[in-house]
Image (tube, rainbow, N blue to C red; front, top):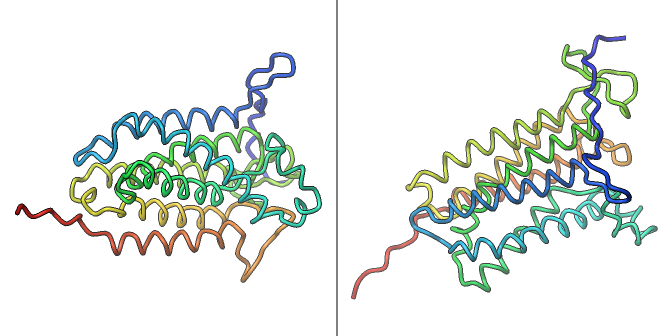
Length: 269
């Protein structure tokens, strides 16, 4: 038996009043959205301002729907299509778990396109500001995964390996914390640095591209330490589903950064 750190058992339910239960995972979503909304209001006002505060407030609803609907449908389609085809009513049982970041990202992208079209906002400039705050939610979500004792890592002999309640007797990488650091803290610091540079903000789409590529790289690396889902295992060339879904994000992000150019100035007549 290898030495391992004890898993800090924390009740996944923060507060329960009768049948009403508030879970850490739900709280992570709520706090992530609220903090992202407050920071986005400030960042969208940076010169040149791309949206008003009321518009940012309105977009929160669109983004929340994109996260929830896209995240759930992404999990259904990317991870367990066969199961949900046989049990379609379970698609609605979000409280049973099962959300995909890649699906949520597609949902938010669709929300961005539709919202900017309706409000006549510059899509790329607005996307730059909005995506710069997304790692807040990613960080909190990974911490909630850790508290839930889910999505644990592969077996390891490193001294910080942990024995998770549902992961068997072997010490495993606390990969949720690795991902919280990569997808959350590190990516947040990078995007905040970029979005606060006037020259970078002038290159519409660059920060959004950095988010897509940065998340894709962070997720790809993190998947080397995370145990693949038992119902999927390793896929093409030994890659995981998370890695395969991250490749298009990296390519799309690199394309956005390479094509990003400052907006042409209007010439006075």
